[in-house]
Image 1 (cartoon, rainbow, N blue to C red):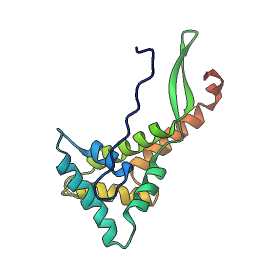
Image 2 (cartoon, one colour; image 1 turned 90 degrees about the vertical axis):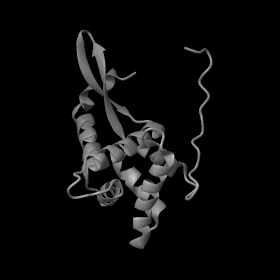
Image 3 (spheres, rainbow, N blue to C red; image 1 turned 30 degrees about the vertical axis):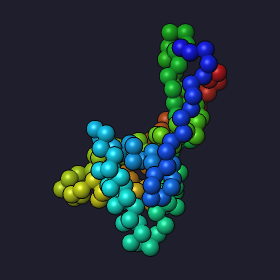
Image 4 (cartoon, rainbow, N blue to C red; image 1 turned 60 degrees about the vertical axis):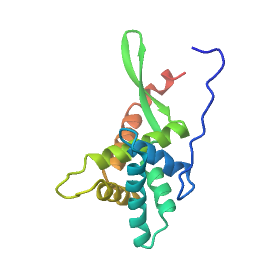
Length: 157
């Protein structure tokens, strides 16, 4: 482990929307280093919101806020027993979890109903915008778990 902290790298902005948030989504959608394919998928999804007369970046930011967890539980061993201790999520980690849950929920949608990944991502983002969907359910589940284990909050240090 280095004595000095790691140098924090800034995420590049995407070429179309000039947003680091969209660039992070593109990086999570990307498979096998195929950035142009991932960019095309994300931009097609955001263009579908333009067709619906919605501002894509505002929709995307609201989706990330709806999905991102505020509290998460971490296991802590104390006296031979493991306790699930609730902790507040750092903003960077909250963003990462929100985007990861969004992409994972999109990938698990059925192929029969949604034929392309663009359709899956659009459907999941539209559901998250309204406070529904698998990614929002995962957030609610994490919040409930943290609330249920609030008793062990004094073990956090």
